[in-house]
Image (cartoon, rainbow, N blue to C red; front, side, top):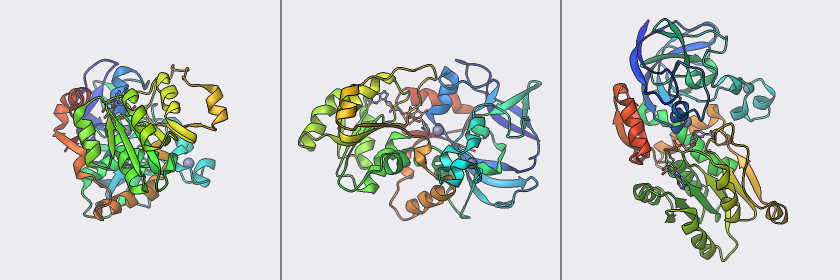
Length: 368
Ligand SMILES: NC(=O)c1ccc[n+]([C@@H]2O[C@H](COP(=O)([O-])OP(=O)(O)OC[C@H]3O[C@@H](n4cnc5c(N)ncnc54)[C@H](O)[C@@H]3O)[C@@H](O)[C@H]2O)c1
Ligand SMILES: [Zn+2]
Ligand SMILES: [Zn+2]
C-alpha cells in the first residue's frame, strides 16, 4: 500500500514528508493506522546524530492507533483494536523479560537498526529501503510494527493522549516511581521539564513526595511544572541548591532525575552534590554514545553511599504499565490533556521540532 510518512535522509537535514510504499505485515507483525504521534526529543537526536541510526529512516516512536491487519501468529490483538505502540518491544521469554525487566528485553538491540525483527524492511521510498525508528516509525499514517511492541488498550480510549504513554509519560513517571523508587515524604529534584521531565514531576507527586523541585531555564516550563505538581521551581541547578538545602535542613534530596534535552557527563557531579546519603541520581536523558566522562566526587560517592542509575523507559513494563497509566488518567490521578501544548499535521513536523527547540512545547503532537 501507499502511505504518507516523514523520512529523514541524513543528519542535520529536515524531515521529508512524502508518499512511501508499505508492505503487508509479516509473521508476528501488525499493520496499524496511527491516530497520533508525540514529538519526543529522541527523534531530534536522529537529526543531530546523538542517536546514530542508518538512513533513510521514518521517525517517531510515541504513537497510538487502530489495528488494520495482523500477520500470522499474532494472537493478542485483532483488526479494529485500539493499541498503544511501546517504543520498546518485550518478547516475554528472554532472561530479562522472564525476570520482570521487560524494559531491558533483548529485542532492545534492534531498536535503532532500521529493519523489522526478521531483518527485512517494510517501507520503501525513492527506490530505497527505509528503516523505522524504534521498529515503529510513528511519523506515518500507517505503519507495520512487531507484535511485541503492541499494547492493547480499552476500546474508546482517547488515542491522542494515549500516544504519549508509548514513551514520554511512562518514561518520566517510571523514572520517579520505579527507577528512583520515590516514597511518601521524599524530596525529588527534576532537571529539564519537557515531555519526560513533566511526567517525572507527576510520578513524584503521585508517589507522595513532600518536596518536588523542578529545574528549567524556560519560565513557561517552570509554570507547567508547578501546575502538575512541583512544589518549588528554579531556573538552574545552582539556583536549586539553596532551595533543596533549606527544604531538607541540609540533608538534601532523595533523588535527582536528569531529563534534559541531552545528557551531559558534567551534569552528574552537581546532581550528586544535591542528593542525600544513599540518594540517587537518575539519568533518563540520552547522551551521545561517545560521551564517556562523568563528573563527581568518588570520595562522596563512597562515604555517603550515593548512587547513579540509568533509567530506560522508567524501568517500566509496557504491557502492565500502559493500561494502568490510562486508568490513572481516567480516574483523574495522572494528567495527560495538560501535556499537549500544540498539535500539528504530519506536514508540519519540522515546525513542531522548531517549536520544541525554542522551548514552546511541553509536548507537540501530530494528529492524523
Ligand atoms: N531513557 C529513556 O527511556 C528515554 C525515553 C525518552 C526520551 N529520553 C530522553 O529524555 C530527554 C528529554 O526528552 P524530552 O522529550 O522531554 O525533551 P524536551 O526537549 O521536550 O525537554 C528537555 C527540557 O530540558 C530543558 N533543559 C535543557 N538544558 C537544561 C539545563 N541545563 N537545566 C535544566 N533544564 C534544561 C529544556 O529547557 C527542556 O525544557 C532526551 O534526551 C530524550 O532523548 C529518554
Ligand atoms: Zn521518546
Ligand atoms: Zn524479552
